[in-house]
Length: 302
Image 1 (tube, one colour):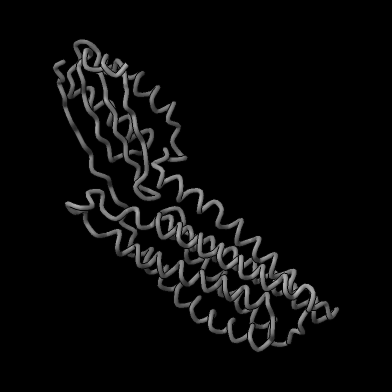
Image 2 (cartoon, rainbow, N blue to C red):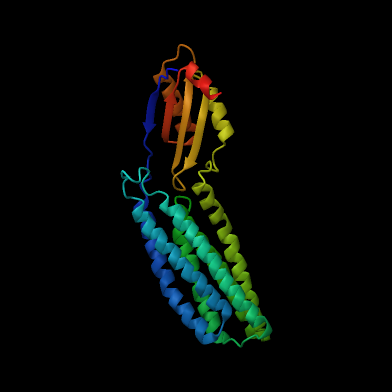
């Protein structure tokens, strides 16, 4: 059967905020790296497991920020003959890696906590409390720096979630320090370390789920695929739409391909323009590949 094909592609528009995002990542990275050293020393000197757990989480913060910073440069590399879509998936892969590393940290913390339940160890709260408070301030400052950019990049979101969970972990360590200071309840340090572990699991679940969804070419969560299909079929210039696919390269780059059958008497170019305007204006999709087919061509897909 003869096929009459008309192809049209629209290149994506990249937001011009990479430099601001990188600057925020650099500030957050150096701040957390400095306080990571302080927390490791403080946890070791004081004997606080919750402080060491918080330091382990801060280590993952530093790793997450480093990977996010590296990927922000790598993603700017242009597509090549081997990687025709470019390097947008780097942020997804590194976000996935960050989440899995965090779960490994959780396993270590829980193991240490279970060992201490039966044999609680003394904690020097005079060292523990100031370090925990300083760690909380570092996390809050870093999270504030990244807050404006967390929706632009899955890596930045991962780093932001790390920092928020770590801030909550610092609060747990502070509360444990207060309990030890006033009540001598050394078991509070162990309980706080487990609470921090649960916070890490909760904060990374959404991240891992998003990364897997993108890697499996799932439809973007902000797009109703049924509504999009119905809107295309409702255009005056379109008789039917089939082979519709919408997916993400990175967390913010939506791709769409579809086959359109124009109504009798409609110019293919008019059908393309009508569909493009709908997809861009209503759904915000700018990277579009549409194929125009004659009616007899579309029948073969039924």
